[in-house]
Picture 1 (tube, each protein chain N blue to C red):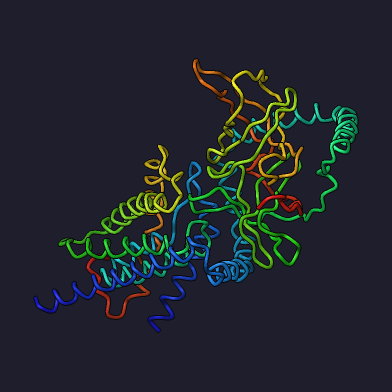
Picture 2: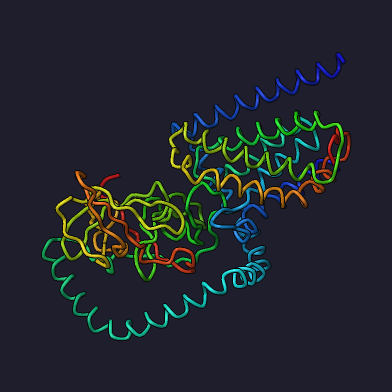
Length: 279
Length: 165
């Protein structure tokens, strides 16, 4: 009885000790005063990279098989949607070239940088986050390739997210759908500005601070404004307006935006070596 | 030898956590293998080992999370300890008890993590979706326990309390 009680006391003492250690670690990291923690996290990404690469090569065909079986009907619908988009895309280059010339001229006129001129690093998506904590992906390029924290990440269709952690050969990218993600936006037709915020995996972005008098259209293209303290260069496609409504008495519109990039099936991305004008 | 087995189980758990968990996502929610390891360590090894191994599993999880370092260590340590305390209260063992216990511990751990994260500025984790996420993590955790519990029993087989098997 005495032994059992003493063991219980020792267990509680160890729990207390570990709790205090955890709280100390949280405090040190939260205050951002320890480069050691960043170094350890960065090394962990590099150390596990080869193991993950091997394991992914072995297991991804199995995972792909089960995903295909479970999502068969979704894939069929997506196939139809992509065929329709392909038809539309065939006529797009002509219109795009014209619009591009016009945009470049306007940006030049205003002394702004053209996104296509920003140097970039191509990267392969090696994993998506499995923590339920944040919407992130991991890419196979890091500081050794010129990737740094804060750099915007794009894919063919538009903005994917922002680099939030780097190691020598890896980087973690926070996706636009993450609840903590914010980006300054501009509606292309009206020129109205606002701030888009992520609201979770597979969900549209919410646009905040959009003036109540703005006249938006469903399907209107949305691009980065370059205004939100210069965190992103202007003109990167963010998405299309999915819905727009104004509740009575509200001072701002209730706008949701479909991201222009399919974040569930990212294979390759480009990291723009863009340094924010304000940190 | 016992420590080597434990290290082997931990490394395997981290690899599964990083690779397979991504493939086993259900409705946008992934299983938390390291949380399952913490719960299983408590159930098999008792509160002291549960706390220590939960802390270690949490530190491993913290390496890859964006939340402040040490947060998962704190939560998983508590989950390991609580699982160990629970195992001491079970009189009659049955095969399904560890699975259900791990599922409950994983659900509780996910909720605890969300609230702990909210206190350090990650309030977005406490949302209306939290119950669904926590229950899914619990169900997936209970399924993973089919593998993790025997692995942890093997790793801790010397001098183990083994109240629940």
